[in-house]
Image (cartoon, rainbow, N blue to C red; front, side, top):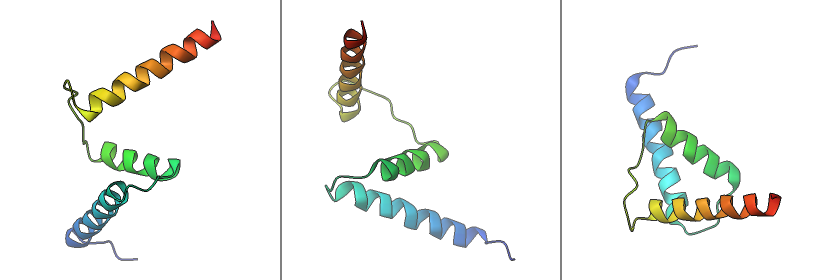
Length: 76
């Protein structure tokens, strides 16, 4: 079996990235599997974010912290 060349791998990477962007921008609810795949794609490509005030990432962080605190209170 022949190995893929760099051009083909770059093309595949671009197609996957475009697919994920379109999925997120569609506004449709994404399955947990799709979200996990997008997360893995970002992680595998060393994509990170700096959380700053008034950003969607900060809002998500705040919501997650609230959920964790509520769960901890339910357990206690």
